[in-house]
Amino acid sequence: MLFLTLLSFNSLHFCSLSLSLSLSLSLSLSLSLSLSLSPLKLVNALGSRTLARPSPGELSAQSHGAVLNTDGEVELDAMIMEGRTLAAGAVSSVRNIANPTNHVMLTGRGANLFAESIGVPTLPTQALVSEQERNQWEHYKHYDVAIKEYFNARWPSDTVGAVALDCCGNVACATSTGGIRNKMVGRVGDSPIIGSGGYADNEKGAVSCTGHGESVLKVTLARLILSHMDRGTPVSAAVEQSLRYMAVRVHGAGGAIAVSPSREWAARFTTERMAWAAIDGDLLHYGLNPQEEFKEPLI
Amino acid sequence: MLFLTLLSFNSLHFCSLSLSLSLSLSLSLSLSLSLSLSPLKLVNALGSRTLARPSPGELSAQSHGAVLNTDGEVELDAMIMEGRTLAAGAVSSVRNIANPTNHVMLTGRGANLFAESIGVPTLPTQALVSEQERNQWEHYKHYDVAIKEYFNARWPSDTVGAVALDCCGNVACATSTGGIRNKMVGRVGDSPIIGSGGYADNEKGAVSCTGHGESVLKVTLARLILSHMDRGTPVSAAVEQSLRYMAVRVHGAGGAIAVSPSREWAARFTTERMAWAAIDGDLLHYGLNPQEEFKEPLI
Image 1 (tube, rainbow over the protein chains, first blue to last red):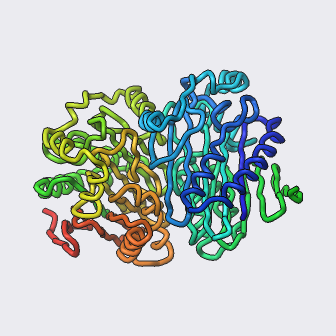
Image 2 (cartoon, rainbow over the protein chains, first blue to last red):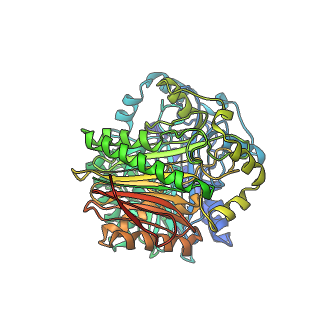
Image 3 (cartoon, rainbow over the protein chains, first blue to last red):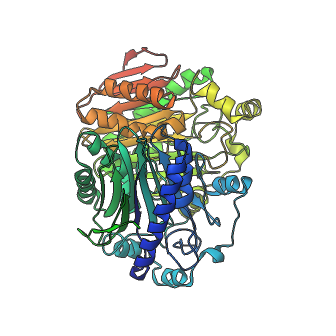
């Protein structure tokens, strides 16, 4: 059992909370995974954990506290995929749902209608927005400014990603985001796009990405990393080469976590920081700054 | 200058009209391409032609006559990409617009708001629906039936795709669709997804795909074909291998057109039929059934 998660976030003081959340998330996920009887259940478990709603104020990543678009609304994107059958699900631009769900690829009103049909509760927008996000939204009214400040300077937007390898060699990935603050209404980034925000294939491995969505889309980053791995490139080199290619070819920064079927894994980024954590056997690995890796035994 | 187009359609009697449309479309595109001064203009030209609105009743592919979703509404998906800078644009689930346009990836209401902001006219749904489509919609009320009958038996849905290579070695692709009849509201197939419905990269080539959207998404078909081409596989073998892989791995049928930077091209499909046409120099190539290729000199 191997599990990796990434979190990109808006405010540095959320770091420790993010890491502790990812740790608890990892542990519950590990449990879910080891209990799962089929890859589909694995995906469902991965989905429900990755898309889990933190308590209000706890984390600026998903659902409550997500970034606001130009209309001051919350629109969420997410994808999930398992590598045995390539079963996948994605939603884009869903609104007023604390925990988006997955089916086939659905967008906007249709995704909301589907969520309603299976009993997912909706909430008024203001119940999903933190005061801090409302203040930041007022500050960063211009999308171009937001891109410059977030993606190619300090840290990217509020994305949560996860990849996992279970004891039977099944891999899975999930990526979920609120996008970038002051994005155009209906803007879709890389997160819900299979092959860009994530990809999972038992024959190659699993990847989850974050960063400047338009750049990740243009190079289909997850698929690019896996194509390097498929040619025998070590996982860390495959991620590094792909991120470097994205920087040179389309001038975009980002990060990714990846795991191979042979249990090799890596977490790399070209943004200034990216919070990540990995559980490999009885050891927790985690980091925030470049070349940083702390290790702690799991209790 | 090299240009290929594919059309998948709902009724066989549209075949000759489709082919003649693709021919006239090709010729105007060739003109636009040869006049284009930059890859961006090339993309715009490709987009405006691929998304061109046929006269009512002429073709069941785009805009007027597109298939209806479960609500009896028209929702269109499209993507476009050029291979020099990897600039790309996509829309999904746009409504009541005769000719969708491209920006960054936009979906649903946001895409419609953007279209409105740049003066694209909207039309009532009934103005976009042919009587034939309304009748077919009543007949095929169940999505599962539609998938079975369209994708893995006779022919796929109403997609238009195009790839082109200009004299400077720039490639581009575009794919546009109404999806599959009786699709769920908000369902997004492969067509607007960069790497699945199409991909263009001057270093590798350009691909446009059609077929069972969910299957194409799971194998990121366009990117898969290009990864084979990138390893030196001849274009026709790359397309055939990828379609075969999609059939075996996720049981989906489809088709694709591809062009390499060295002017190699192919049109292949695993559906029963796919209308395609190519202009290579002064020669028009076209076909409908497997292994069928007619050649005619261009006048």
